[in-house]
Image 1 (cartoon, rainbow, N blue to C red):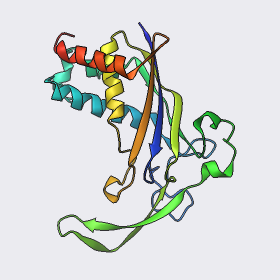
Image 2 (cartoon, rainbow, N blue to C red):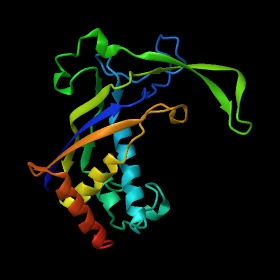
Image 3 (cartoon, helix red, strand yellow):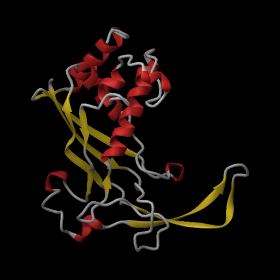
Length: 226
């Protein structure tokens, strides 16, 4: 199997919030997920979920029949690129998805800046609950949500690692990640708009955007041949 390593940097254009499900000692009704040093993170599980959603959308646009991961139809192992990349209930994914760690400053100084108070900073944003049927604010539903800072970078040098034999599948994963412009929660409130930088090395060789674009075209041309 050819070894794959993908570096990811997500740069938040608007404040980003990946909720931890509680207040964690703040005035916020919903706090953010942090690592052991108190730095904000985008969990690897969300990276995998966003990547899978993007891969499936691309494949469907190319005419592949991609069932839901736990659909009964997946009990019959029909090969497709999504299953090869992410696995299925009967097949473990060959890839590992790491957490992206938030950093205020250059990403190459992530470890050096780790203990700085700036790296644990967040902000509290007030919002109201909207009645979607009436389009008006609900009574007594003022909420406070903890978010990261705008222009914060979330980074992992080895965000996705593992082994994939098909460079077309690597290109598909690369394209899906580049389509991911919304991260975290509360997107309807304007949170989570981001841009992303993706660097791919396959079998120890850095892949250019032009090479990956060509591999994606080749994958599209051989639809259904996996």
